[in-house]
Length: 482
Image 1 (cartoon, one colour):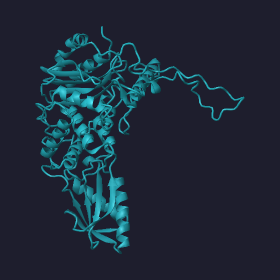
Image 2 (tube, rainbow, N blue to C red; image 1 turned 120 degrees about the vertical axis):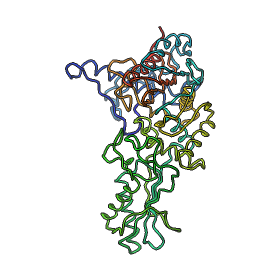
Image 3 (cartoon, rainbow, N blue to C red; image 1 turned 30 degrees about the horizontal axis):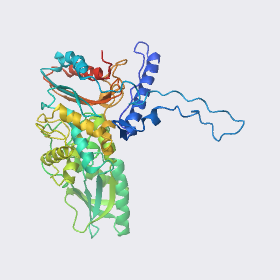
Image 4 (cartoon, rainbow, N blue to C red; image 1 turned 135 degrees about the vertical axis):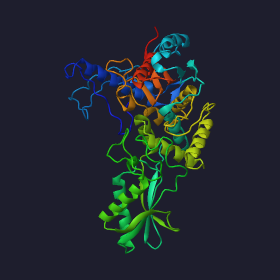
């Protein structure tokens, strides 16, 4: 199942030799069919004895007489076409759904965990999400630099505190004398020029109703506190962290990946809003300046971000650092902490404790994983993934649906080569810094069990060599025991 956000893209498999569609397209389509079926199974819920009650209804059609739809039946009309057999058996309906043998898994992973391409230190955890039992551990409680896999912690905490339907509001407030309009940032890094255009139209209407055709413009970024620059800034991977920005402060039209960023995202957003007000027939006098709204100012325009569920999926699929930092601050605000790096660290950590996640040794220096001072354990990451799979916590499900799909979407779109055993079967968050490589996610094993895994490595000399070694570890979980 694809993530429900519009930012991930599926990979089309082609014959590498002549570019024509051959049996590999058929194989790719079959793999995608497996992904869709497995995704439907995983999303079905609720569970019964560790498995989902709705699986048989989704995966088995034996009780139906036909699958084709011919409209309203008539006595002499065509009979329904026979239904196709199930693409996948439902989880828990096979004769092999007993928990995976831990000893056999250790034998499988042992030669792979020691691959020199991974560097000089590797820690790992693999658990059965239905039972919570650890099937494999290698330094599972060792705190290491997680890189972007820390986004699993950030997004889980945000969903737990705010809920999947939460939206971030950007507003425009008009002073009582209708002379000053203030653009108030709420912390939405995905605010767009189209959103500003709509807000400007609403604000212009309110001004005309007050008999005004000109206004002073101010902008307010006070919702966030503390340092604006991330410790690695300036950097093409993240903009200054401010409560007001358009398109993550990118100076081009991209919506993912590295890009040159403005050093004044809030000021640029205010100037863009001023331009839209002009197009809406309102003259902006002077230069926009930073200030809070006047007392008794009334809101005349509002834009809401996409639901938090979609923002979480976009964060994980594309490894979006700007949204990750915004979600960490939204969590801090909701928990009564300051909307800063320090406040976000306290808020996210405390929420993980509330979820009974093992946080011993953890240090969440930021929400994105760009800070090399971040520390988490593999056990923390697998526990988070298990919480997201918990049938009693459906609000956390976007953490799973947002994970990139091996060979198909997001940061795993180009990782698994055509024909790889893991293509389409592994969903995982990637992490990469100089000398640090990580992979954490889920896979359905040959017994039909949903496993959560986390592999953290440091000391590698080359990401291009370390990543295939990590992918081999994840692929081994999807392979039958030998």
